[in-house]
Image 1: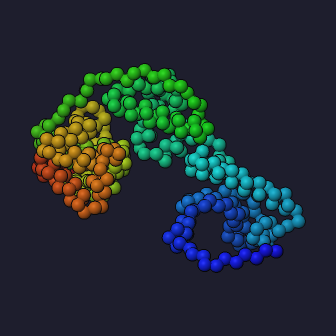
Image 2: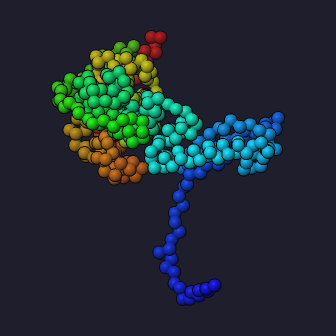
Image 3: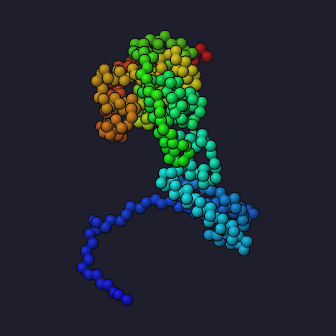
Length: 372
């Protein structure tokens, strides 16, 4: 036996810092509450970072036959063995989740033994992504008639999509990125892309002006109130799209559905929004007979540019991609940033004649209610 004696040992307290605690996954065997008849059911629980998944084992037994770890019965050795095997199976799935070979939705479904089709897997995957992913695949499915990604399908999509080249390119990139992820997760086959060129198309939507918007509101009929109100609401908020209006919660800031970037909402427009019936307004916008959201958005951007609004602030007012926005302006909670954004927004609204438009709409709303 050897004895070691260490003396005069100096420890640098700045070097030896305690390690930061890491949330570890865990799987435990649990029981339900005891029923009036004295029975319990067993289930396994997967604990992840801020999430948990309960996996039923479909085992029902007397509470007296459970000792806290295993089933305490002379005939239960095979059952205890099966529980351990099931636990080992779940650990394999958790390992795949931790190295990002499975999404959370896939881990949950596989743990519960729910085999899903490719379309169901895709739907679960898109639920965890921003709205632009779902929009791209909905458009792809409408044109191609399928959700499976192929060269032929993508080429048909490029030729059939009637939107701007930039939008088509964005949709194609989203579809390819999702397919690459599904290949990595083992739900799709890798393909070599051979895509046709996305040709430049003439812009179909002509520009609009503040005078045109004002004229439309002045000439509006009470029965068309909801469409015109939604148009003005969209204009005052940098060209809100219909998908933004559907999820708008009446708050001072809104995460744009396409990019997720926080946009400051014009406070004058929130009261207006509460009077709009979106189901009545939708048919006008998608009939292509009126000023669309893109033209309203372009008008807002044009006015902001012409009056000299700072480029970075202008991009946040419009909810552009966050990678192109200075963090200084993106931090909307900072008082200085808040003041700059609101001051710029106030100036733009003044040039859009927001006060007059809202006054006209209030009169139109009163007329509509009086005729009922």
